[in-house]
Length: 432
Image (cartoon, rainbow, N blue to C red; front, side, top):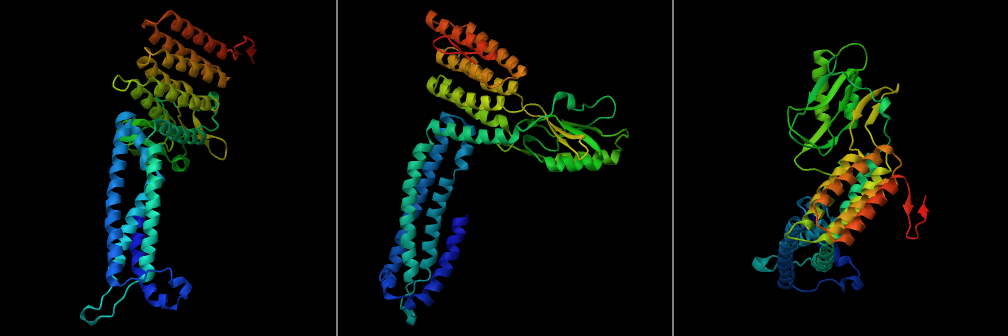
């Protein structure tokens, strides 16, 4: 839309400037301008407009086919990476803008019909020619970009990069469990319900903090970004910060402001949702493991990306995020996904559907080994061992060749070594 509006403005303003300026330009510059008559000028502009609208239709068709292929072959949740692709945006803007510019300039070309003075905007027609060259270059770049973008490796890379940014932004310092003030539901706590249905997209921390400070209360939001909310169901609990209970007017105002501070929508986004990127990566792995696709190599690659993200999460603080007032008192408590829930997302379904493929199971065991090595937190180690038991449970019902079974059993033992922070190298010397 910006390209179309800019093209209209340029197509109206440039011929006016052309009429006043072109006769004053030095000959060395006018030598490169369009020199044809009115019919030739209209012919050039008509050719530009006609060809570009055809190319634009082709570009739209290729984009739609790419979206359909990505949705059916990999996951419908990766379509967001295409809709946010700036190369697609710029290419379509260039093509549509050049088309609209040519049409807008064409209306200013005059012949000597009915005694009017002929006029050919030489500078404007030349600019149309340059825009056409730029559009051709943009089309070539777009086709090359599309060929790269449709590759599953590129999709995994883009999702990985976006999720890594979200993870580093959202998983910041957390308070110790002993510092978290719990509410007594049987006493002074009140429930806050969702104002609308949909996925929890983002939480306005500043708005929530201002609301609870004004009400002299404490709020714990026990739903996380990415959770599905239903209007009228509880999403938070609030209680007074002091000894005085919250009166009804304060409670109603607090509920309304908390509801406004929780943004919902019918599509998950990576704005604050740490688990959304893992969900996309796991979806690609599951689709690759389906009988219709049967591509375990892609599943192994996807699990590798999940392992890198989980290792990053294991090295970050976990636990609720607490917003405190100037006196250091907790005011807003925000739940965040812990490593156990992220591990379950990354391991549970691939281990179930990939149990028949030893390479997939081997990569899952390596994932657990890498996560155990990346963290010194005993809670993380317990989560790793729990999911190791889950992988071995799914593996137990499979009839594997003796060599594969022994290899996987060896990898399972290496997970226990990593929990004890030992990483045996091929020579047998432990790495500490």
